[in-house]
Image (cartoon, rainbow, N blue to C red; front, side):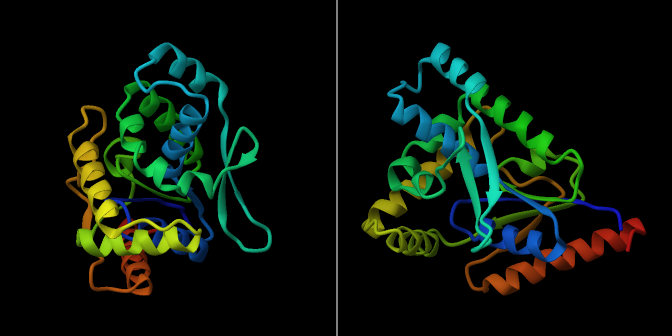
Amino acid sequence: MKQLVIAIDGYSSCGKSTTAKAVASLLHYAYVDTGAMYRAVTLHLLEQGISFDDMARIEQVLREISITFRRHRHTGRNELFLNGVNCEDDIRQMRISNSVSEVSVIPMVRHAMVAQQQQMGRKRGVVMDGRDIGTTVFPDAEVKIFMTADVELRARRRQDELAATGEQVPLEDIIENLRKRDYLDSTRAESPLRRAADAVLLDTTHITIAEQVDFVLDRVSSALFMAGWD
């Protein structure tokens, strides 16, 4: 069976990653969390004390850092490694969430990450989630989904994720962070967050993860049927 590129874009905490991972697992596709890549760059800049407007240092960093994904052999969790070090938990901290949109608007950062993402998906058979997959990274993706949800629900989901790692953050702070990120992501000049013309809208406010997965799989089946690949 011919393999597809599945692009899942949308706002933070809509269930993109959870849905994308489940779909990838069921289809035996590779999974790439592109948002985690921008979080990794943000983490590195913060830990190295590099200003977000120091373009010379950032350009040097982008030439030197290595970002890879590995699946944990026991838990099956997809984990990000930055220069060989597992940073999956570190990149999910609120301090990274507060800065990642500022880093992701930097053109050279986006160019570097998009190039890596395109390389990761060049053999197809991949599920990618992010904000510009269906518009910039893989505009020819056979399946494009754009996810959204009520901002307060998104904030509660994010709060639960943070609490699971021991980080307690007031709901109001998370809502403010999400709104700020939505604005920055949607208005940036380089690859802004927007729904591709041929992307199917999926509002996850009132549906379960299982229903989200089924929705995407239905789109996959339709794409295969229409192309005569089933």
